[in-house]
Amino acid sequence: MSDASPDSSVSSAPASPSRDPSESPPTLDRALLALQATYLSDPTPSRRLAVSVAARDLASEVEVLARCKPKTLMEASLALLREQRETNRLLSLLLA
Image (cartoon, rainbow, N blue to C red; front, top):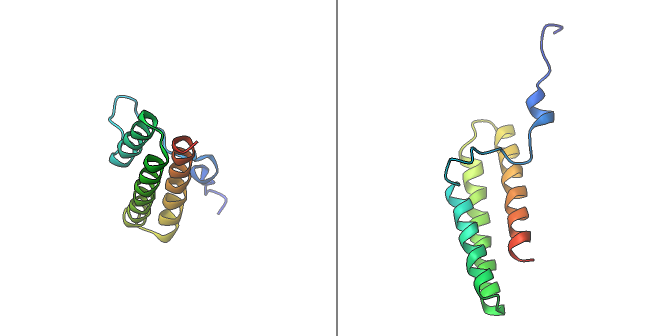
């Protein structure tokens, strides 16, 4: 056990993975950005409701994707937690 190195990826992992700026954003990120642009172009109550419904649907999709991709239960839990944090952050910006 003395030769085992501590797993630094668990304690030092960022809340959301860093992305190469030259890469296009993932589909869900693009969808959230489109929702934000739609809402900001005309922030009426009906538009806010439509954006909220669409954002809820996207959050559900993120949850499904986070559970499908990882191979272990721990990886699935961590991926889901990261995706939920990122989705909540984007939604709070969107609906502020």
